[in-house]
Length: 204
Image (cartoon, rainbow, N blue to C red; front, side, top):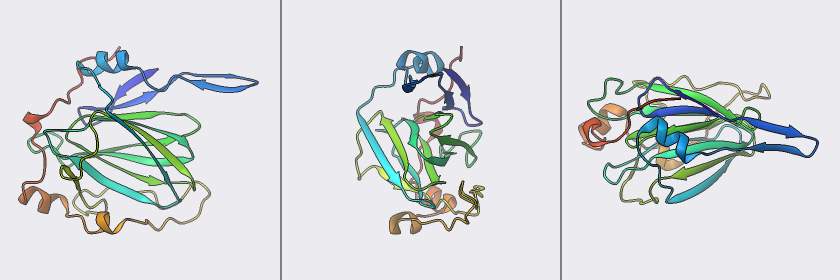
């Protein structure tokens, strides 16, 4: 697999090798040793999730308090999504910036995001299935949301689905009511950059 850093430290784009024959396709979609080489620390999987979304569903921006923190390895096993990582770490050189990767069932890329980073995605197809390997279990007392449509972040969400139809983002009531970046910072909800592990050590 090929591992490349995104524009935000602690976030990676992973492109796996695919093996095709007349039976189908085999993909090695996670390698703990390769991630350890890239990040300089182990990624212990505590929980794994799967979300299936209709075209136009927008989930996020979600993040977890640090501590306990929650790193994620995310890939799309059916359909396609526009997957976004947001730097929410106060004091980070890239605080408030975002980067994006299209995850789909063709290239079968994955994204790794370290502790303190926010995650969101927009489903570009019906039945878009995302699977997440998470370093800590979900705890509603430590999980928070940022408005994914916050004009301060100015995320350039796609306006068309893969079939060419127009996308009208569908958010949960909780995500729709989430504060923007400035309000979340003023409420002291955001993680601090110096409290998290998230810098790329090396990539080979």
